[in-house]
Image (cartoon, rainbow, N blue to C red; front, side):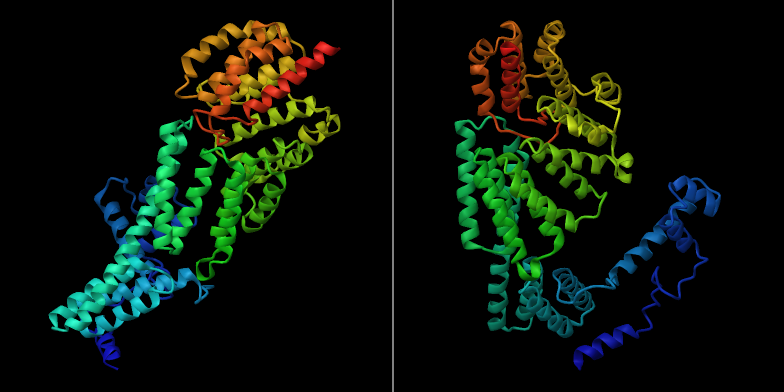
Length: 509
């Protein structure tokens, strides 16, 4: 009853003015803050200039408009404090976490105005509710305040209890922060190292050892969550793609079995990790199954939907499942949201279409041509180049993929003179833009193409003389992710195998 009395006395205090929630039923809908919020929400105002002109007949720099924006933000901050989902599951992690954060805020406010006893009771509730969902940073904060309260009251026994609680929570917070930092280190730093040299491997193994010890000592959900993501990337950098896929599948199972920590977003992200690992391991079955599961969680046309389709398309392309690749390509290009994608994404899909067309020609899949671009239409290299406005600006990413694709079509059509006429320009381009440091695999693959031209497209000589460059290329980590520094729609070693087969076909005719 004491806690209720304290809370009621504050709630009914004359010092507290009535709270006007922006989405409340009693809100003044004619007020300027509400009209500004409503206009932005309904798309009437797309800029500060439009809002300032419509509401105040002023410019955005005018002090009256700036004050209006400040008043609206203050009301929004207050409204968000009372945020509660209409369909919120009281047993869900997010609902329980929100309640814990709310209780902590209430306890801190009570103690800031001297109502320490009720504040302390609420802090104990914070600890009790935070423990099952591993909110150690909240346990840490609550224990600090309770430790301070007990020492002021001379209760040394309770001080020791809260002090021990604080120390344990503090260690787990630090462990989770360390796990997060090591995960980001390997993703942001190590994954940019193109060749796994001795020094890099030593660093990776040290990180792996540290992570395993950390997980053994503090096996919290967050430590395990970052560990799985770390170890997937670790095996990819070590070129153990099968193990990477195995761990990524374990990662999804960990999410599914995580109880209160489970949500569909986490499972969807885990399935994306499996798709990435499946692509590198060239495991079509695992990738297809994961893509189908992932799409169940994703809204068609969303960012993750397009990303899943991209992974699945590349997987189909690189496991000779060209029929499925055509279906995926069409589904993406016919989606109403495709036109709204960023230009870079649309350009990338056009290049994907070019590689798919080439592989259809190479594989004699003529029956699939109409399904890809429509009846009576065919792929034109000049059209691809004209359709990509950023093509001329990009020196290492899409442009390299397009240059290589152009040579592949010439090769398929036996236009050897066209290839030779471009080799000098390609050589200059190689040394100007594709250095070993910035584009390791592209650098050596272009050298392999130059060897092919130097030996007059002879398959045996090309194979023999380009072998040293192939070994160099194979030393580097394969990356499908389209970036400015490297993009491989089909791995270069696989393209080289296709090139040699084409050359052998021509020789044997």
